[in-house]
Length: 315
Image 1 (tube, rainbow, N blue to C red):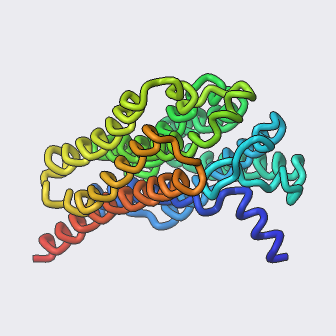
Image 2 (spheres, one colour):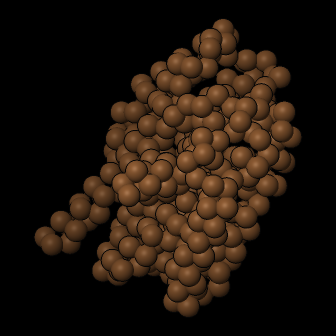
């Protein structure tokens, strides 16, 4: 029984649910900062469950379609790329994965439907976009080079959606943090898709990694560098102009050496193209962890401000 559970956790990429968890937590932290007296724990719990279901659904669909197209049979398997391996290794049957993807999608939509009743058409529009994207992501969007755009939009909408469910409003701070989280999600997807370029290209996909594959190393590096700069620039603007407390940027600044190390290693990879495994796997690992810790650093900054505001109100 435990072995079967572990297989399903692997199939839904349980470890990668942390990305959605951090996005939801950012939205909830902002909502508490905005309306501390109106925070609803039940809504928060349902938001986590609903987002986890939708996240699991898109990953299961992705595994299913990659297997059906033969992509997972060609990729070099790593901890961060090449698919989960549950279908190529015969651990699950394709129809089991497909049905599970549908089930998780339905569960996520049911929770979303309850919030449509509570909050109205904004949730309906967001849920409609999510549903369409989940269904089309693996079969259509990645073939058009829109995978990173979808993932970035997903991260942004999770933050905004979690905030909106609690407050019933969309504020500038939620949009800013949403864009930051979205950029980090897109960065992770791009970095993790590089090892799969050959297999994806052979099977007709057009990922961002494929579109950039023939560009000079300096241009590719400039693109990745631009994402890091954008993330930090938006963070500074968020704290300085939106939150009006620039000192809260320090948790994110502490991660700057980590970002520089990733960029250094990535540039070395672009110039010398060492083997994907294990050198590039370390880059993927560092990028995934950086995105998570960076998202958490923003939660930390928002939480510190909430505690400070509460303490001042008590006085």
